[in-house]
Length: 462
Ligand code: FCB
Image (cartoon, rainbow, N blue to C red; front, side, top):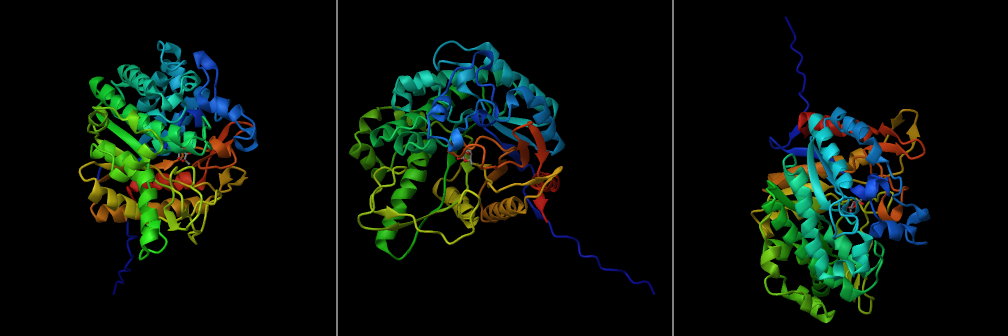
């Protein structure tokens, strides 16, 4: 008698056919070469040089030296079977003073990078603006000045006319909430201004820049136009408490709706308009702006790291990252945290994606950033990072659950391809799938890189 051993097939949680897998980076965080080929300073060069602004005085001067090592980096992407590589263009390379003529040597870098990616079988996905505003434009008011939005449209035109024949998917802005509310509200990001009116002016001008940029991209023949927002699920501490619910509604407004509504519904909600008015910024919203801002997009990029938990508390001062949010506190979420103390809770991602598909139907979604910083310790040629694998695994399951509940999700990009300059946190917060030894610039794929590569190859999780 033969005994047929019953071997249980490992169950695979499969993602839809054609699901786009990839990784993301941003120019200032990885490129270095801060003065190469005509690049001029951005607000982040200035900010990082201002004592006390960035952890241990780190700057992006050298970063991962990707500007010179891009070929080696693209080879790594291809070795890991990364399908899509999302990166940003440095405005101060392409138009060094923000508004003047195009600097061909700066644009040529992205031309080389795109060719290298395509030759390696990796699809380029370009973000036009990931926070590195030319300093000259900030000297004229930065995002508080309406002209900055017009100059941004010119940047879009220059970029798409050079790269549009090879780049299918374009993103106007990355996380305008950070540019407006961290840049001009609480000042923890460049340009470091603490001015609520400026934050609201910046909010509208960033929305306008998105709309004008989207139109310029379309006019230049871009196939797929998108915007990436850092959205989250904002939860009331006690859902049954009316004051907590109001607090959650306000924070949801400033984190999510003030960006989503004008782009996808063509108007600001009344509670947000009241804030523009309160901070003397409503005059910036001119006739016709909302038609521009609501130019249809093909894809909404969602960056997700953690949910928010809020409660009402009489007398609490406003968190300047949400100007106008007096009387609100942010209780501990009681969750495990990353090395940056960010709570880990993937249910916020499922809820967010499902909510987007209900409240803003019809726009395909893509997770354009998700990941975590942990303390990575290399041992020879290996960096074991089980916590990062756990984080991404949990969030991929959360994404899968959202798809099962009907969210039209087209892809998932991990943040980040490699360790890099984590803004105010400098180089100590490592988000990469690839470890970077900054002293030698050696790249070492972490265990998470190998693991993620397997996920991509099987288009699913075991
Ligand atoms: C996002 C940014 C990205 C990176 C991650 C950790 O807010 O878009 O550049 O800093 O957070």
